[in-house]
Image (cartoon, rainbow, N blue to C red; front, side):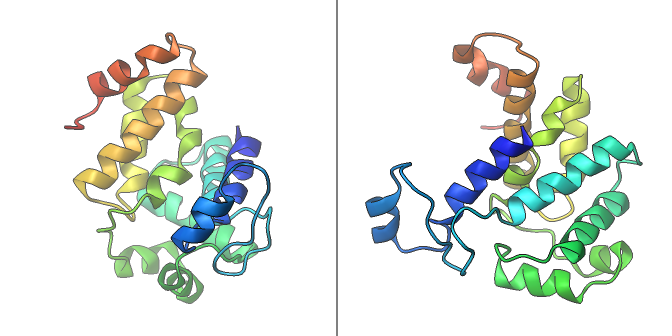
Amino acid sequence: MLLEIAIGDAYRAGFEFSDREKVTRFNNLSAYHEHGLGIASGHYTDDTQMSLALAELIIDGEAWDKHTITRKFIDSFKRDQRLGYSKGFYAFLDSISSAKEFLAKIKPNSIADGAAVRLVPLGLFPKVEEVLNKTEVQVSITHNTPIGINSSQAVELASHYFYSKLSPKAQLGEFVLSHNDIE
């Protein structure tokens, strides 16, 4: 799963922060392209890095709380600082030295897709309630808005649905809607 996340992220990176002409002209799955912020083609971004941090946390079995998740994000960033984060969030992470400082300074009101794209590994938890609860805790760190939480939970429900092989693909929408407050 992590390899597929990294491959998709590296491909998508060539079109993030790019003009519409580049996206429509080159986004045909034939090649990797350089990221709009200078990331070499074929290299993954912050989204994969944060997915790896969450996967490490799952493997380590540490407490699933804002402090521990944030510490994992910071540790992952500090050991492998890479482009792909928004300029503001990159500068923020670069200036932070602890989870306590991060949580005190972050403005968790983003409605962008950052939280949703980083948390696919959470779909591996065995129970829907656990997937939803862990997703909400993780998302609330940076995207503590109804759209941030609901959209991220929808992604995690899809991840859980396919990982757990619950039903045919065609029933995914029903499954997500039955467990999510999306309107």
